[in-house]
Image: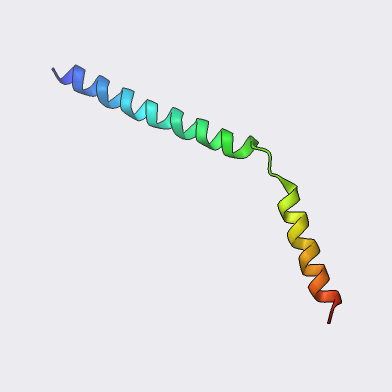
Length: 51
């Protein structure tokens, strides 16, 4: 009985680690859309030059 509980605990912890690693890998490798940043920077430049 104790072996079964230990196996479930190890399996659950392993699944959590694998999920966290997959999420971290996805966050690190996703493509960031630069158009939003470029648009924001252009708006800031326009405000700065109008003064």
